[in-house]
Image 1 (cartoon, helix red, strand yellow):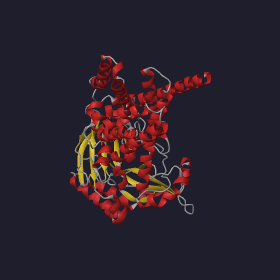
Image 2 (cartoon, helix red, strand yellow):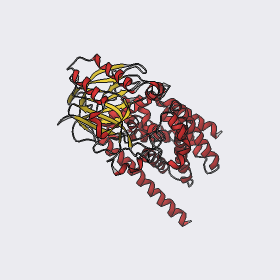
Image 3 (cartoon, helix red, strand yellow):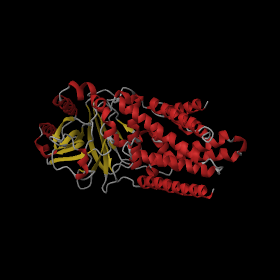
Image 4 (cartoon, one colour):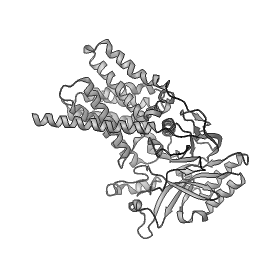
Length: 511
């Protein structure tokens, strides 16, 4: 019976996530899990197994598209991300074995869950993709207040409503009508908060952009049979759709240049010279492009553990290049995909090397050090670079001091279903709301688009279709409130959790 109830919770969570349209189900999806957890003191092993099974069903059904990229990595990701919430609810249930007031129970649940999500955003196997607040990426109008709290506020919202629903459903005989009113208020207040949010609109420095979507399949072409120069020429040819002198900058997607370029010789690279020639023809001020780069010497000491090939050592980077007539600036991706771009526990992962590399993954770790996290386009405008998986992390990069917009490059062609690329797009929509800044998103196979500070998708290119998007964004000062409140939520949760632990210890020592 407990397994069936946990399975129901997993199904409800899956239906709440994109590409499904039933986001509202997230407000009751945790109720079955909380009921299962409430039986922990009687059947701890069975309860944990049921919770784990339910969350595993959710992760497999909501992210089954991952298997078209990496089988071994996907399986491990599903197992770990099912284990963390199952362990969290088990700890919550075990900690409240003594009778306690509903407020304390709910507070303990929220602090444990927030701490777990924080862990899953910073530890070596970080995977914040399915944090509860991220479910609202398909409903940006609901969460304009994320500009004040970040998606961490969305997690708190989901937890509060679910806990109140749990108390209302399973303890109904002891509850009064006031409980129903409390649930209604908890659900409705964030919608009311949206009315108080000042929308930035289209102000600031205007930048005209051309976003290129070449539609090169990762496995069959990009890392398969298609020559690197042929790939680049295909992307460059799409710029023929712009009127010379009408566009400021062009953006190519992630790993557009697939042959690693030595960073000390960037200006001498034929690929970079080719891009510059095209930029000059169309009067572009600069071009952003994804590329693999490497350093055979002179890498930062923090990348010493990322060195590849002991015979001819070098550090490899998944990079974004900003090319202008005057030079090349480089940003290195910092938030790496576990088991694909980094293997945190090499001694444990070594048997999986063949599987990782056969799917286009890199066994080892890319370098991550950056001298700075922004590209300066002038005295009053900057571009904040994001590469693929980094859009799953709130408040990355850190707020800059001058007006900016975000340049997001990615390659979503690994995934054979709409679930993956739509979920990834929705994460970017939340990042735009949190920072109150525009995003220009260049995706190899789609969805390339512009995203407004309200999370609205503008000029989307069709998935698996080549195309060119021409539009305008505006550089604005990003809000720092969201990051500040996110850290406040996390540290408050951890502090309250420590207080709970101290009282629990005192209770045990007293008995």
